[in-house]
Length: 335
Image 1 (tube, one colour):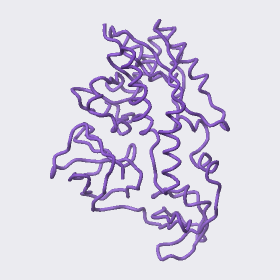
Image 2 (tube, helix red, strand yellow):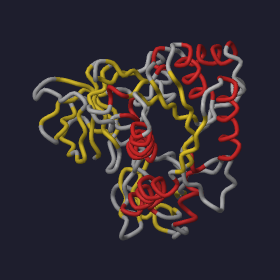
Image 3 (cartoon, helix red, strand yellow):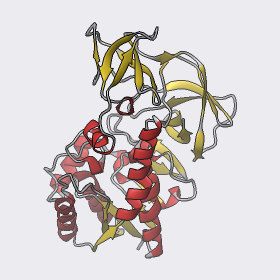
């Protein structure tokens, strides 16, 4: 009997993942991963751990708690804050998958006799390749591009073949205590506060000027660190116009806005920290996303350069570029 360690968050998706794997005949162990949570925010991790424990009791499977607080703080939170400090736009969920779920948790599972690890992501791992999940609205392959090709055969995503509504239905059929639990939103360590509130705790507001494309001062903002390219709220202008952030200057603490949404029609993007599950062929057309749920944009790959072939939202430094061949996620890199 194959042994699988399931990362249980206390939510419905990971709960159904464990139930499906047990039904399929696996020797399942549920593992609650304790991350890092700010001391100044009310955090519900104890309640989430309790829910995960109740799921294991219902399924009659072993339950473990894996404390990765130090790893989470270093690899996810510190990275997140440092990138914002540089003026970049990081994605902490991607780093959480790389270093926590498919880093430390994966190593822990393999070191304790597991044949596989599983999570409640909506994606498909098959024949050492990664694909979009069948539910287009829930597909989470974008967040998984950092998984190495060597690890992928030991990772399974049972929910990749299901629609979200089917997952809810299965939760009720299995009688899981999390069947009615609402989905979590946003980054796990933020809980119910906004990204802006979180950043303001570490980077106090510092008023700066809002500029138009010609460099004229037309308003004020609370600090350039809070804004990302394409953002259209959180600042004031004298004309009270609807505008988008098109650039920012961290040293001068200014942001430049325009009524026209920032777009790129062509050009190269340089990537670093690339990870290719399937290496793209030079000269061949693919599609890419620089944000979750963004409409895929045509591109070509040459070394660490990505050539944009059609109009696209302007990608921003620090974001992940994820490349696809149809539904197959090839991997990607960071801008």
